[in-house]
Length: 216
Image (cartoon, rainbow, N blue to C red):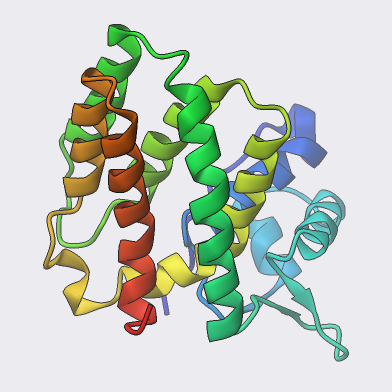
């Protein structure tokens, strides 16, 4: 298995930079459910010592992205259908609130920027671009100005990242155009159609869950 790609970090801000780099990697699905994680490997990939990595990992354990097992092995939480259903319910509820608030703070330039994210050319279109997906959603959500709900949604995406790793491996992941629901969201935003935007967002969230939980 090839190692997850993690960006090297600024040596002058080791603690926060290590956490930010690892958090970003987990959020975009760089690690799969049940995968074991080595502190030494992470430190080597980041190009830093073990101490800041250990502190970053401790925070990720507290946030649910990693599990510190009784054998002291770090592990990405294994696939759990019940946990996934709960994540789905939480995302549908909280991201709808962020979208509602964001629509009060969007102008044409902001909507154009969202469209630019999903229309940017890619070198590899064989699998969904998880960074592009993340950038689209959080560029939109940050427009809400939320100081309470936004961090909660960021934490949900952190826990959901490992499931995304499985989603992109599903052959059916590419059966529907990658950005179809994102495009529907943008179209609804241009018309200030809150109902249409909310429906498109719900369909986008549910799409990835259905790949792993067909009964949802």
